[in-house]
Every structure is written in structure tokens, then in C-alpha cells.
Length: 225
Ligand SMILES: NC(=O)CC[C@H](N)C(=O)O
Image 1 (cartoon, rainbow, N blue to C red):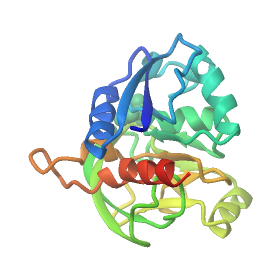
Image 2 (cartoon, rainbow, N blue to C red):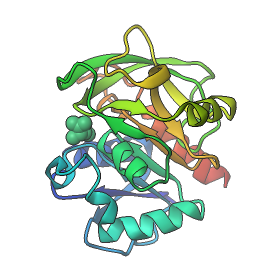
Image 3 (cartoon, protein in one colour):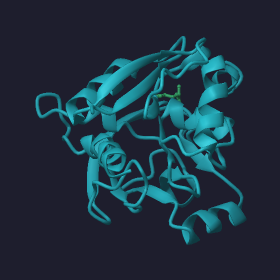
């Protein structure tokens, strides 16, 4: 049976269509989920896409966290539902307390848009198991509030438990503590990532097809479950 992966659209979401496309290219069926709908339509996993949900008012992700769809996502993620938050989705996951820490204004105080090299450091999460350990990939990055911050104890805990999923290489684009580009929860079903793997899935548009691994991983995970 084809895996069904929900992609949530909030008012102001930008990358929902690209996320759906990446899901399809990986071999799963994308299911469009709407922010006002509490029903997840029995999807096997959920992607919270990038963008400017609710216009980034208050703080990025601060309002989306209270949307009806997130009530169900939060409850089911605590029960093991795989959830990937990309950029604005990562911000929503931190605001929801499904992931620790927060995403703050880039240290440059400018919006940053570039192709970014990363190292995938945790290949046991639901969303990264198709990568080789320490595989280096290049995917686009574009954000204004991408600086990952947390207290020292939380950072040490994330490192000790192998929950730093991806780290920036070459250049830290936003001042993230310890060059952190993505993290997972303790169970490994919830992953937040600041760069955009869904924009690196086809040779025609580049910069690589190395983002596809996140979507291939969840398929692998669901098939083996
Ligand atoms: N690409 C994105 O999802 C951007 C997220 C958010 N609006 C920011 O600027 O940080």
C-alpha cells in the first residue's frame, strides 16, 4: 500500500506544493491538510512546510502552533506519528514544544538565501535513515529567523543523545548555536530542519537531488514499521 504523507497548508505557507512534489517523487502519496481541519485523514506522517504562516506575526510559528490542525499533530506526534518541520515548520515545532529550543533572528539581521552544505549526523531518525552516516549534502536555505538557540544543558543533551540531525558546514548562515541545522525529539519521530530538502529533489532545478533522502527515509521507515 502506498504511504500517505500529509502536507499542512497554513495561510502564508509557501513551500507546501514543493513538499507535496518531493513526497510524490519519493514514491508516496501526498495528502493536502488544511490548517483549520483537526482531521489528519489517517496519514502515515506529516510535513510542516516552509513559508510565512500567519504572516510571521508575533514570532515565526507562534500563531500556527495554536491552529486546529496542530492540536491533532501535537497529540499524535507525542504518540509516535512521524513529523518533519522544514524551516517555518521547524519554527512551529519549537513553538509547539515538540522540539526544544527556539529559532531567533539571523545574527546578520538579514534574510539569508543560499545553497548550504550540511552534514547529516544522525541517520537513525524516521526522516534521515536513508542517508549514509555523516553524508554531506547541499540544499537551499532561506530564512530570516533561523538562528537555533537553547540553553547549554539542552545543547549538551541534544549532542549526547545524538539528536543533532544536521549541522552547517563551511559557513554558519544564521548564528545557530553549535552550527545546528536540524534536531530530532528523543524518540526520533519528530525532526526539525532549517534548510529546505524539498527544493533539492530534481536535477533540472538543482542544486542537487540530495534533499530527496528525507522523503526516501520516511518511506523506508513506514515500510519497515
Ligand atoms: N523559508 C521559510 O520557511 C522562512 C521561515 C520564516 N518565515 C523566516 O523567515 O525565518
